[in-house]
Image 1: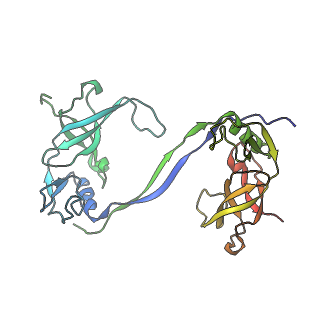
Image 2: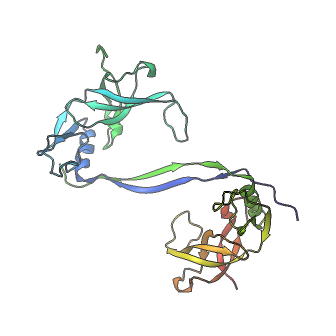
Length: 155
Length: 145
């Protein structure tokens, strides 16, 4: 009996459905986004400022202080240029994904940096958030469409 | 400001495709034809087959046709979820195909009756009607009548 014709590739799809629970602390931040507000919170123990803030400090476990607003101006802390296409991609490569150090925060936010050629992005570049139109504001980071270089700033 | 937590449904998904070696490829081709194959090694016939013997690193030998019956060596009971091979609760099991070494991982259907599962039970493959050359060409294993 002859052997079967070999198969050369097999599909090995990965898919997982789950529920993301933001938690009380992060929900404060997400609700702020829907009002174009970036809400940070400070730790009374170590003075670390979290953006986005959880409920408790991850270093000393103290409950964080009351939320306060930051203007969103910041600097590119580090970044990568995405050149590779992949299924489900919503933006045509190349595009820039960066860690943004928002002024006044001790943590960094990951977001897109657009309205600039990828090759012109630099670590330290001053950036500002571009908020979504009113009808697209939501309790998610999608309320910020992307960050862009601050006009007139010398990076 | 409300103290309630927000939540939202999420899906992570990526449609991986992987290439297979010549022996695993032939094994999968066999499944498409509703036939089960193993490969020869110094230690015995390995099913499911591998390109190399994990114990010695030696290249595995010829493919040999097998029966589709075996013995459950280990199992765990699970509730059925969307995308699972069976619409009712079932067992994921390691099955030693008769005449082979190794263990084939697959679902065992006992009609949703947990009490019918036992280590050492005899099972056989139930073939799917539409086969494409993948592990799911075996719908599941069922109790040998």
